[in-house]
Amino acid sequence: MSFITIGIPRYKQFPPDTEIDYMKFMYYLGRRLPQHDFLLAVKSKTEQFRARNSITEAALQAGSEYLLFLDDDHVINWEKSPGVCPRYGFVDTLIGHMEANPEMGICGALYYHRGAQCGPVVMKIGNDGGYYWMRDDEIVNQLQEVGVTGGGAMLIRMKIFDRIKSPWFSPEFDLGTDLQVCKKTQEAGYGVFCDTSIKLGHVMDSQEIITPQNRFRIQAENAVISSGSDEGLDKTWQLSSALALYRMDAEAYLNVPFWKMGGISERYNPADIETNKEDLLKYYGTRGKEQLARQVQFHHFPGMVNQMDMFLNMINTRAPGYGIDIGCGSAPISFELALRGHRMDFIDVDGAGAYEFTKWRSKRRGIESRCGFAWAGPYDYALAFDSLEHIEDWRGMLTKIIDSLKNGGAIITNYFLNRDYANPEHVSMDKEAVKKFLVENGVYPLNEFLWVRKDLGFMDGKKEDMQNEHSEKDRILR
Image 1 (cartoon, rainbow, N blue to C red):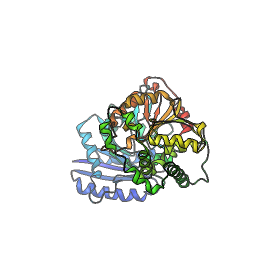
Image 2: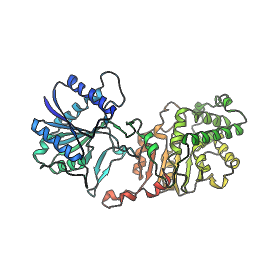
Image 3: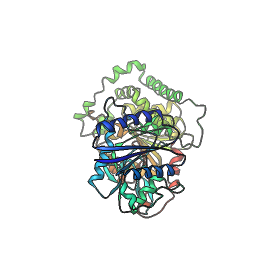
């Protein structure tokens, strides 16, 4: 039997999603976890540190063994599962970790920032002693020791307060309250951990809940780092215009209306690759107009339209930019970036139907001066849409891409979103190997589809100005 205080610093009132979710959470605790006793302590806050100190004092006076801090803007059952939701049992999992390791002082659950990058709210300690936000590739989706775990979902062993002097939390002039208590806990000889397999939702100001499933879309929508203003421009109109022009050019090239392309694309058989695996370049070089018709149809599927919208809004064409599109095919995204003013090199297999269309299109639209069809660089960004999975020697390809990027340049790809393992043309689908290769070669994820080439030598002891580390990237990426 354990006695746990659940402490919630509250500002004015709970968001409706949080209020409903926490009521269900409390009901679950009472009915499903009878092995524990719970005390609920909700403290109105004008200052974070005062509320946390008051809740800690209440937990000490009540004789609690553990204190679970939750913020007033989280949602535990963010999938809105009907009936009994096992996610509410995460507190029992955290207590289990504590009881298995007496040297564990704090154990948290994972949630994500509400800001533009929607990154994990968990930090590591660098070799220089500084605190740095952890990247997605450093999240192992299980219990792991960390520098700081977010104070919005943090279980504390009350015994740590025998070694930490009051006041336990101070004004947040230099350090946030979560960093303060984690730092003091480590100095007192206890470890700080986070079970990153436990993920909570985070209610945004718009009342949208950020979750592991939607955070990448929200990143793209919120990551507006631009030297210009898009005021007055209708994003839906921009996307529709780009897609309509792409479709119009394909109709002219194939000399058939869009609705008849299905009959052409049906003649494309990906299984043909089985008899051509000895020479993939020759195989793709002989894919004719059927390939183009198939790609045009594919890029009109709702999921691909959403991706097109997301990726077009990531690139700031109000600033000069130079990119390369690897395995470009019919290039609906990169060609639109060239139309908007960026220089673009298109790379694919000569003779392939979709690639020949892109060459033809550059002449038709009068932008030949901005379009190249050979590898050059150095590039601000490299696009790899629906291409890496088709390349056997992906290591060689990625090496060439990385070597062609400027420091701070980005690889933008939908490779890690691809779930089509049945397609025989997808010969390279070892995503974990690709992620590991990128990180080992100095390319780090901001999210699942945006990877930045960056010299992180400061982790070996050298200090850098972190506020300026992405200045060149920010000029190009929204």
